[in-house]
Each structure stands twice: as C-alpha cells, then as structure tokens.
Picture 1 (cartoon, rainbow, N blue to C red):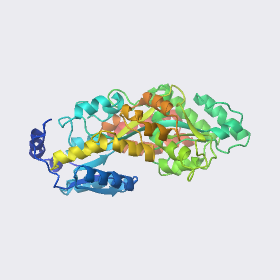
Picture 2 (cartoon, rainbow, N blue to C red; picture 1 turned 90 degrees about the vertical axis):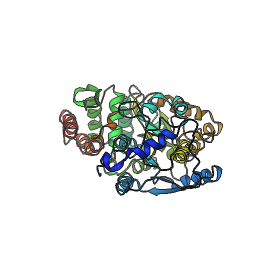
Picture 3 (tube, rainbow, N blue to C red; picture 1 turned 90 degrees about the horizontal axis):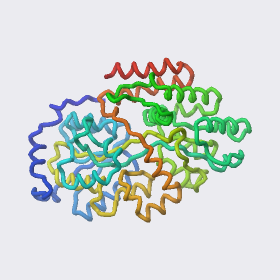
Picture 4 (cartoon, one colour; picture 1 turned 60 degrees about the vertical axis):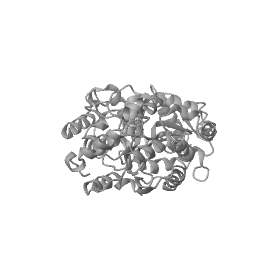
Length: 432
C-alpha cells in the first residue's frame, strides 16, 4: 500500500480556515448547490444508492456516490489523494483510520456541530475505537460495529442428544468429537480461519481474549508468547485440526463471507464468525438450509470476551464544502434525520450493528432481529466485546496481513505453539 506523506496530503491553512468558520452556529453559507463526493467499498451498493437518493431529496443535496471493490478501496483512495483529488466523505476501516489522519487525508470532527451529543450516545468501547491514538480526537462517525460470536446448528445438536450449546471450549471440542464419532458430521466445527486478516487474526484475538489472554500490552507490543491463555487457545486449534474436526478448506478461503457460506449447508455444528453473518445463516431461506432460525447464537465460550471493531465514515481534510460534507456524515453515521434512518437500513437489510444503544429500542428493529437472532443475547455479547488500540499503529496493517501465515502454520502443526507465538512477537518487532 502506498505510503503518504503529510506534506503531500495537507496544506493545513485551508482546512483550518474552514474549521474556524464552522462553530455550533454554522455561520458559513449553505452549499447545497455544490456537489458532495462520497466513496465507499462495494457492499450492497444499491442500498447505499437508495439512502443517498433519500438524502438528496430530503435535504436538497447533490451527493455523488461511487462504490469501489473492497480489495482496491483503500489504495485507490490514497492514490487519488496523491493525485490531488478530494473525495469529501469516505468509508474507512479501522485499520487505516489513524494512518489516514496522521497523513493528513482526513480531519478530526470534534469541532463540528453536534459531535458531543453523538459521543454521549455511543457505547464507550466503540467511542474509544473511533478516537485517535492519543485519545484526544474523534476521527469519524460509525458505519457499523461487529464482533465475533459463536453460532450453532440446533437441529444437529438435538440429533446428537446434546441439550444445550457449549459454554466452554472443552465442551465444544467434546461435542464435536461426539458428532464425528456418531457420523452426524464429518467436520463439526467451522472456525473462521480464512486466508485473510478479516478471518484468522480476529479469530485468533477472540479466542485469546476468551481465555483471558492479552494479545498486546499497554504500548501495543505483541506479547502472546508471555500469555498462557494464548498458548492454550493455539493448542486447542492444533488439536481440533489434527483430529479432523475442522474442514481444511477454511484455510484456503479468501474471505469471511466465503467461510460463512459453508455453514449454509447445514453440515457443521458450530461456527465462529462476525455477528452479522448470522443474518443470512438463520434468516434467509433462499440461501441457507439453517433458516429460519435453525442456527442460533450462544455466548462466546470461555469468559465470553471476543474481538470487536468499528468501521467509519470520515471527512476529507481538504474538503471545500465542509458544512455539507459534515451534514452528510451526520446523516450517515449520526442521527440527522431523527429516526436513525441509515443505521436502521443496515440493521434491517444486512444485520450490521451500530454503537448507538437507543437505536435498538426501535420496534421495527426488534421485530426484524427476532427473525434471526436473540437480540437481548446479542446486546449482552456486545458488553463483552473487546477493542484493541494496536490497529492505530503504523505497522499494524502489515503485521495483520503477514501474521496469518504464521498462525495457519501453528494450526497445521508445521510450527510448534511456543515457536509460532514467538514468531508473531518477532514479526511485530521487525515492523515497528
């Protein structure tokens, strides 16, 4: 990925001048007659077009939306910025947000109207994840939040005479061994060990957290070689893989989406993945044999903790139409319309969650979630969600990518657990 210099990206005088004019009173003139550019990665672009059209009609806007494939999204935004193009409002995933801020591509939003109100409405962990590395600046508003959950195939467990889903990892392994022995499932456990950072590494952190292990210290250094819980989690991974309780195909999948589609077949008893994937597994009969609601959620095993993250909408530091860009951002990631319009669309259509608890009091949301998940249980799981600060380090993106091969070598038994964990520590040190 291209490295961007602060000098290349930002001539601060323009951004600071705009910020000085924009206080709570919004003394700057309206710019509804000027177009706003808005870019995001490809995920249900028709849904995005629908709410952009709604915004343009309701607020007399001229938002021009563009969707860019996920794999090319962040490099494309950076290349365009280097060429001098300004995209006013953008998606930004959590792994790139701090770097974009430090390199001058995006601005903090604390000085813009109604920000304090939105901060108070967010859950503290999600708010912290949206802040700058030093904790002093809010770098965007939430697009969505998610965390890892445990999903189980209720009919399969019932067929095996298992009355309740596993509450511990040992119990999950016992259930899986029984299911395999009884020839109910060849590979009962489907972890998200896909060959990308969106699967293997969040899964790694979730399982470490659930064993009470820290992955990073207070200075964001990898310390898994010092954490017995991390070793315990990896020893379990080796055990289930060696016992052929896991379909080895998961190691070659290129995305979490591809992994969760395996669970559609109904051939697995347990699955760990992003929370929103239960929407298609348990709620969409046209795709999944486990819908409606034959797949269910249980609290994450162990102490219940799992990895949680927040992706965001951000404002370009060089936008010439700051007032309108912020207004659009508040519509997307705040509550400009007064009824959590955009958040509701994502919840209803795709099961994407958000950090505003009051949105879940909406009757339409409650009724929708009831078709595929226990909403109260999901909200309890979010209380156990654990965020990290390491992704705000400049080395994290490269570490997150390169670490996958090391962890998968541990899984396959190519590398011993102690050696593999030390390799992760050495990898981070080499990049820092």
